[in-house]
Image (cartoon, rainbow, N blue to C red; front, side, top):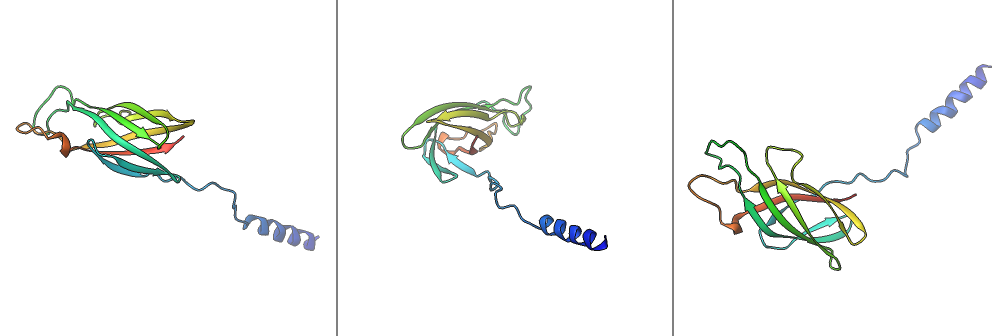
Length: 142
């Protein structure tokens, strides 16, 4: 009886130590900084996408002012994979975690786009030139 218990214990121990090789690799989100009206390449699982910021309307409250509302940045982005192209409207509010997120279909693949930050932040005595803007974003397959 002892031998049976010991053999069963050893048998179970061998299977408990076995590693799983079939697990899918964890997808890491890549954040890129896209300058205004300049092409930026984003690589997602070996697929290169080109992102362009076509339009940018910044109505955020200046950093050194007191405002009733925080405002937002309205963006018009273009995403292309070389064959297909799609225009994506995105509204980003820095005080809301739910804003700046958009899903889109490019070819036959669905993607998720998230705007994390838009820089520079406006100040009261100077409006940034459009060429100064950079949009930190990430795209992933869904």
